[in-house]
Image (cartoon, rainbow, N blue to C red):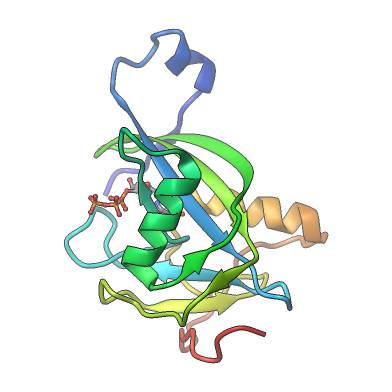
Length: 167
Ligand SMILES: Nc1nc2c([nH]c(=O)n2[C@H]2C[C@H](O)[C@@H](COP(=O)(O)OP(=O)(O)OP(=O)(O)O)O2)c(=O)[nH]1
């Protein structure tokens, strides 16, 4: 699969790309111990099997937070309280030009329930699941900067499992 480009937001804004931008709400669920939840992309989607943060496309009548709340209920069975906007990233994939709105989420209710047959894993840095979706790798670097880590990923095959729930 060809690799995406991280698009220049200025170029996109100024018409350098004439592809429609798809808005995506992404939830970075963070437990009390600092672990964050990654899920694998389900079969049938672009980049199936790659690890990402849960979320999905924003519908036309929704705010980012509303879309995130809906997507997380639909995909992983939890209801979030507040979502704190963190960073925005534009990624030019072969299949779509997406604007990713990453939000930190520390409070939610409900038990994790992978409703699309995904795998899930609570991770700390360095991340031990592989491969990570290209548009998701920068998030690990932002975590690494916040947490004074040198390497955000390490390619070690381990059992991925999100059982154990909240810390
Ligand atoms: N959820 C999520 N999507 C991401 C991340 N990083 C990244 O590049 N993306 C991209 C992959 C997809 O092109 C897009 C999300 O679209 P999607 O197809 O998964 O959304 P969806 O759940 O609404 O899917 P659909 O069934 O409506 O097609 O954003 C990430 O960390 N989480």
